[in-house]
Length: 428
Image 1 (cartoon, rainbow, N blue to C red):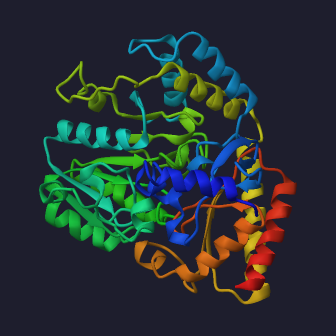
Image 2 (cartoon, rainbow, N blue to C red):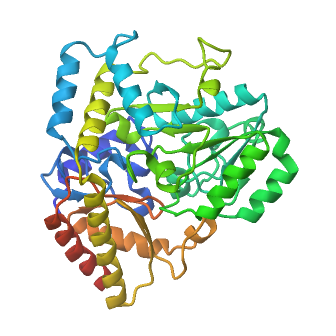
């Protein structure tokens, strides 16, 4: 592919931004390439500065579940922007988005809108500590909850891709209050609660882990986690930034029938604009200022343009009868394409999928946690990534991220992707 303009712009960007990017994984360093610089997106496709066209399975890391430049969402953004882009004051649409979310996720009796998933997770942890009067939190190895100091311990996502699960610049005093458990390890969880249960404020978990690649939960493990937290007076926080409105309209908690105390949301509720939210039981959320002593604020929280995009997105999903069934069918077709190619060319892979979320690990073992994820063949992934990009398939430049399918993808996209998979696996 011709990428002269993209390279010129990216090289200049490296003089002004660390690595030339505003979020690390975008730099393509883990796959040894320079990234295309995107000019526009439409439906399931992206177009770069050199007019190369790609079928997009990154979908802005999840929020573009309706596809790029979806007409109803764009119309809502334009209408909102014409009335002003920010007020720092209450608007009626804030209420409308909050009502839509609380109706979809009943465990969120009250919520607060923020500007990102990182901000939402950080704020939920503070709320939990304020409510319980305890300091310790538990997270799981390989789960990523944003880049706030106390949560960058054995993190996933970009931190894992870069090979730096912990971050420089985080004081030891911050991480000292974070305990790390192993995802899907019920026995280890029991031991941790025996030792620290009375001191733990909250456990935060991705109910479906999607930041060490997609790792599916053992349902019994999640149920035991819910029981342990209840028995020890510990708040259970579901980080559904990726899974919220993605795996079902009510998120993973609806899919698995497990009710957390607090939920963290992002991605889809902004329809491509920067929005996050955290919320849960009313008694907990009433501890948030101005009702209680737990302080959290944000000038751009509930931004009118971002809220309008979120409302339009959620209404479109809600009103589309076959929405999740169609996404699941597309995801299954993609999974089948990988399985068939791997079998045909004798390539060891392990696939995890739930609905429109999918990860392909170059591994001869089932991936169930951080330890099994990091045993994947990263050199083989690099080659595969390059071959796919050459054929116009835009996937995450990391073994430890998921593929996202949108409602805008069509059977033709899957067929083209299948051909690219065949090409890539024939060369591995």
